[in-house]
Length: 357
Image 1 (cartoon, rainbow, N blue to C red):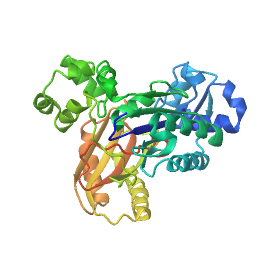
Image 2 (cartoon, rainbow, N blue to C red):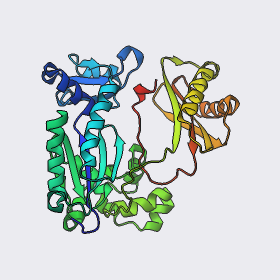
Image 3 (cartoon, one colour):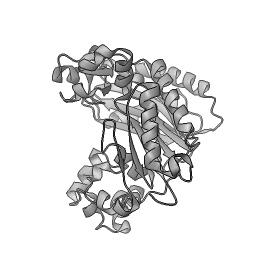
Image 4 (cartoon, one colour):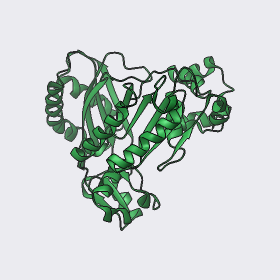
């Protein structure tokens, strides 16, 4: 491990499902998923490994999951229990370092650089932390250990479930070069397709590009890709994350057929958002207002504008512009705000869509 930084990324295995199986052992023998109901356009949050054998995956529509696995046992989420388990895990983390950056209820980065536990070995600390999670919380977790956050997060997926993987400094190049570009931060399906059209499929081929060329094609992300494909990531583990945005989304049981129906649905959505904004009691002034639309064919678009005091009229104008991009029935509407300049490459916590509807 690097003398400067020792980062552990801990990721619980199928977390919500694991909590359910812990509390009801009979569920360990059946394909299990946690998510919204199929007749309410639910989405799968997670599934156990038996369900994954049938192709059931997170972010899949519940209806599709039930078709793939007719015997699937579907449970609604129980966030109080999940939060309780998450808090117990966090207490374990804090016994090893106060530099803990949670990404969600079930995963976090730990910077254990210079810590005295386990003779200073990040590998041994990860093993001990995982053993304690299994013993004290009753679920399993996997871990990745490396000199930075990028490599640690990729490595935590290497020996799932209930395993860990170490990327020492001497092995970084051999580890990173064969990786598909989809493993890199910021590379979704659209960016991966653009890279493929340019003849780039893995980090080795991406390394042939200059930072200037990548920036020309991909903007700020291109500069980040130049470093990532070499296993370089200077982001620190941040214990306290500043909220960058706040939003509310509704997924409708029936498509909103046209713009008029979307406009009619907007006031209730705005009221919910403004209540949440008031509860957040954030002293910062919003920087941008944003409206998000997901059409019936799952194509998605958003429209935003500079705005320090968004109101219904602002959201209505953004809605009109966003809807015009697709002009189709709408399954999801969202409104929100961004605080300050959020164009950096941070990784925020994303709530599952079914929890927002």
